[in-house]
Length: 179
Image 1 (cartoon, rainbow, N blue to C red):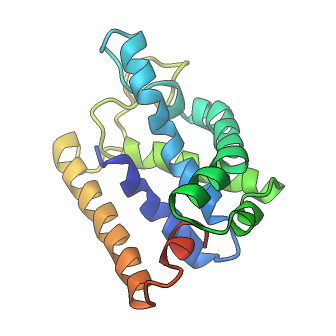
Image 2: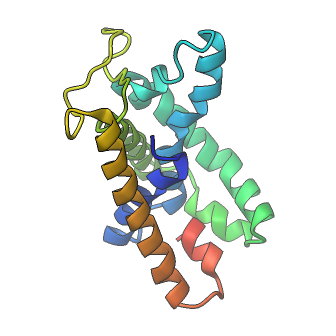
């Protein structure tokens, strides 16, 4: 599995295509599905680690709702504190709107889709189907598909970091976390 932050590559890509969109909403939503991993693992006695938020239905409903809540209410405080950013500027990009909801929806579904390309267990049709849905696995072999997806997402993430660093270190974290 690509590490959760590698999913941020998609957030940066979407933001590059449409810079006026909320980068915080994209960043939060592409990572929200993995919040369920420790809880699901503990609740199933280690039998499962991905379930509700890694299904299309769970991501579209509960996941979008969580993404919006986290973006609007937690992201500005955490990011401005940790990275010493202007909280008002961060809050401006995190203000609730219909667009923020749509971005949260798109971001979280992108996570589920990317995971379905390479994970050995894909609960994308949960709760209707409890078995793994493996039709999207790139190579038919989840191990090689994981290598491919991880490499692509990592390369994309490195590209965006290097590109922003070329612009200078002043306001680097503002550009990377707020847009």
